[in-house]
Length: 398
Image (tube, rainbow, N blue to C red; front, side, top):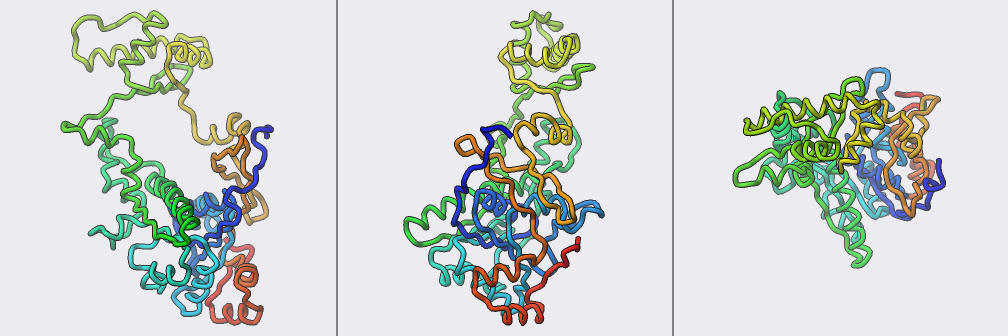
């Protein structure tokens, strides 16, 4: 790792976060805070975080997705449906600066942990709620995961129309990740306000809103006569592979023609679609004639265009650029080995944060957290475990 990527002190050192979330949007918010230096305690229910099972059979338990969203945290497994479990949660609320939850609206109140209760117990506390549609929405009670939000928010339909392809689901959890980023911003802003005023706030980030607030195509869909903006196709450069160029295809054609003397295969008046198709073929023929991909991309840059070769995701993650930038952290996989996890992208004065601690097993830090943070004695902790208020996965459990 280069000098520019050395470790930097924690910018959120001293910030204390109670993570009541499962799945992806909430846990990713808490993971970002943990990697920035916050002390994050995750309360996991006895049935476990469901993303432990979102994996091939051999990877279930400490799955890759669970690891991605939960590195850097401590874990207490507690049954919040029991009164003593609720008391543990409230003791941690009094310790925390922020609480994150991603239940449907009303569930926290049903657990006796609604905003009014938390605010009364800790006046300066910030509560971040990530949910599907918002507590003021008629859809507030509906279950919501990213694939559903992609559909109901119009993103899938728009993408199919733009590409001319059949309707299909996105190959990522875009709604979850957008909500986690917006949730992190909202929580940090509310913490800053609480520092000034001594009074916390309840911040709410619905997945539906977060996805559309971050979707770059909304201005085009909101025109009086909606249009789909033109974007360059992927160009087939023959033996070199496929190349992406940013911007409208008309701009790519004009710049490449001017810089490199491409002959127009569609002069004079012709239908727009015919011109576009013939010019795309001319660009592809020019690309295929270049001696190698490096030369091709250099000549695209010389034309004032941004371009890049279409790469495979695994190849990129394990490739030289990833290695040069220290993109992957190798963390304990809790199975006797390590596994790679993509690090957060932040540099502070050109330096990165340390590699995060491994994702925790369910209930791994029960005793440590209850003794260290809450002052519980061994007898009380043993009684809570005996009553199944506290639970713990075996060290070799998947």
